[in-house]
Length: 234
Length: 234
Image (cartoon, each protein chain N blue to C red):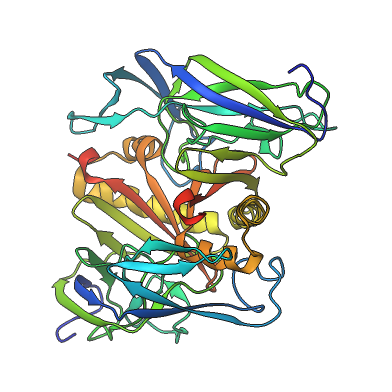
């Protein structure tokens, strides 16, 4: 991203994600949130058809149930400041957040740590359940259309997402409650800086009306998304 | 509950919850998920009006926003088998789960550990955000109408909830991801026993389509609710 400098915020608007008519998912004895708890003798791979916006899943009874697709970008981020981080790990730089809200119609805000930001993405999913517990969701190749913008000299601490209805903060840590606390603190900061809230008022309002989404508990750090509806921010 | 015996399951159907036109919430320096992180000099108590199904919250700007009420029972359970547990602690016996799905229209399943079950409840909330982060939600007195039933000689391991649309398991542990794992394992067991799923198929389906709700991260153990839509269980 030309002109991006450390201390800026990169805005990535997700305009479109096009996916094919088939996706793949798998469960393995060596990964997933329930490894050692669910009996898996060998890697089980399933190719699932996607038709008319639905994923077709065949149950053990042989009946077919349909899950509405909701394509999103699983791994998206910038270069961290000093360290080399594996693409499997989420963090302040973005990365493997597996956040279903990074989808068409929404804007992602990322802190810029390096000249040019060094943006990258991959790992698109057709649909994912909360927690992504078996370690995969429905993995697909994709054509993606993005629009970039910059906020100069103002850096967010962690990735943020804005949808037409909500503001959201995405934080990753371990244990999971630490990620949740970070996300709530970031949301309170956002409500203070941009929506004129006192800290304690934001805290109490979130205790009454926040939404908290578990993106995943299978990557090296766990990811949560704290959300508040814009209708409460007037 | 006459006739309830250890090894049975108690079914509690929530028929109605009537609440008054005012509720109370508070933030304290000594409790809440963000204690020590959010600046609170002394306990801050807020009385909020409830009118026409909405909680009226005044923002720091002085404008009033409305949060739709969703009354539910915060603490509900039976006697544990041997230990005396504080009502603030959730667990396999139920207790202070702060689960918004224990609301009118839904059925709660509880394991019976003692003769007569020794059922109790309290701690009704008019509305609560995910995580209940400041330690309180909108606390209200209430009139409650319940219907009890028993399943003989078949015990659930953890509290379960059934709504017209979903089946849900409620587990409490620390750290939070352990509660999530327990809840997912319980949900897989339920899908196996009652919906003819193979374990690994349930695991993969949940990775694509589960919902996971953080009830609270402020009680002595943390509570999550894992859910799957009944439309995927045909």
